[in-house]
Image 1: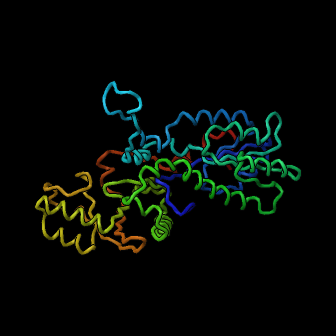
Image 2 (image 1 turned 90 degrees about the vertical axis):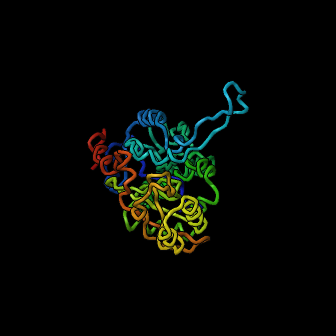
Image 3 (image 1 turned 135 degrees about the vertical axis):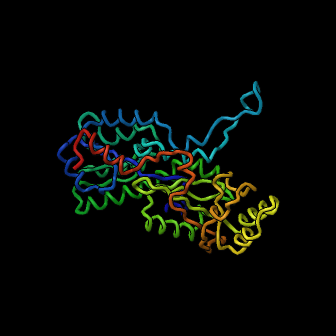
Length: 342
């Protein structure tokens, strides 16, 4: 992943394609990745209106920050932002999350407004921009790139234009989430989340997502790890603990007078705890403690990690969450596109 880090969250997002030639748009849609959410616009003004409408949506990282003040009536200098990581995973219940625009692809030569002017009017700094150019447009494209107006430019006449475009979309969507979640990542940066930047863990995480077809992830704490989602909305919980984390769990269990077999399991590193009914930690009322233990896989990275992947964790059913799936979003998008998605 970009910058050798895993962003705190990522989910499938939407690409806008803008060109005044409707026939070109329709033909291009045949070349886009079939798993990609996209919207086609033959009017730059209509596309800008759509982007402005998207600005009213609350993004996942915005859910996590709220203003806190130390006492009522104190001056504003005593106000500060607090971070609530638990709010991040709640995004899975919102089907609108997939509508977040991560990349725009716009033709340079359009009547009324050229592609660079269109990019200049985009207010969201995290949206990545690809400019389609003709034979004589590369000079202005280079100038636009140097000015930071666009992130890539692709000539329409290139032989492998579809492959280049799909690869650019993939890379820029990844960068979008890196940039959009940077403040949140800085807020959670520390020992508990060090695995987000561990190359060994990152490699394992990417292979895990491929194997189980996990297309969304959200960083969670207590215990640390991720909520992971498949395209049909099935949840998984990845628990990521260090040796120090396991020691903390053992100390709490001893203080609570917990059972010796439970302590033995954790001391051996053969299992990790997920006490989802008691805020992540053992409590004396957890008489059925075996139900909260899961087989551990040990991973040697910058630190020694103990991992457990839990299929369909009961917490989210207990909370009554209805997870909105990407597959359903694509079906609904197909039915509502102004220009046909073929």
